[in-house]
Image (cartoon, rainbow, N blue to C red; front, side, top):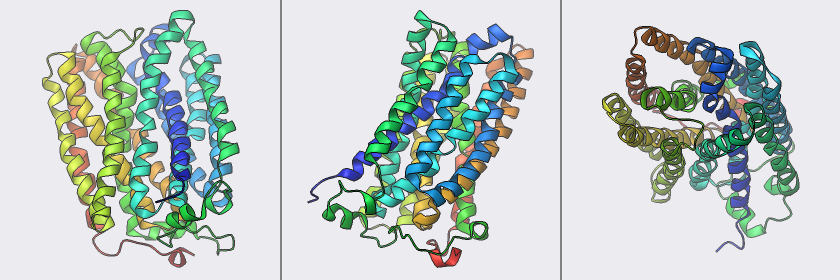
Length: 429
């Protein structure tokens, strides 16, 4: 029996940061109906703003992953949340497509540091058998952040304007930063950690943080099939979740006349499902590992189950009412987050902790590149069908594409990881 469970307090910090990350990220989607009326945006204009964020996010992930591996998770996370909080507040002072695109650039650069820092922290603080669960818990913050935005935005709009939405929520990151700086450090330096828990954390002998290791040859990561497997899992699937984030509010507004100035219970239920899916997805594969399954086999089996569940989104086109759509989309977003929790964990399963941030950054960059291209497609499809007077048909096409992509991604991941899985540190140095 462990004397304490400080590592789970660390997960709470990661969960809170991820919640703030997605709260700030989601605001543009919720405010879209208001902003497009005020600034006469088209769907393509909005797609350009989304693309500005994802382009900066792609560059930021590639840079931040490598930087965080060099300077450490504590300082790296602090810098990232400072940048994205300042950029979030800056939205309040912008006007038009160009101004919002510039604000989203700053937000993307800062928010890019969240997942590389969080996954590095998990690799430092958890034995392999608990990493998927820890990842699932902190990744659940993505859904909670969106749910909070659904509460917070209508409240602020009832008393103030859209500008206040940005500067009020932008301040949350600075509050979190105080707690992070006081209570976080790596296990080797954490005075609040018992020896018993430290030994438990280090039971795999692959997570020890060494001060005097040879520098990692970052470019060599691209020579490994495992890196490309992770790139596939992120590059094909991340853009789908961003579609869920940025376009679902508009989908319910146009299809079912949802008033986004009021608390949206339909959207709250959907994004609550993301939280359930993330935690369950991490728990499920961790349970299999504890039962004796080979780690990578447990992850792949979990990915298969959730990829099959994702096919339910194709049925959304047949929904005749909002609550049927809510049910189908809830399953889809829950399956996505369960998938995401396991894909994230693959990075720490396949690579030593010294390069986990770099691998997560590379994979995240691939997802962000997909997030640049997919909004172009979405905006073009929706504008085309809107011109024909049937925008719902555009959403139906997009739902069908999303549903099939997970199985394709899993097949590629499987083919790339059939043989050797775990990479040793000396192979990259």
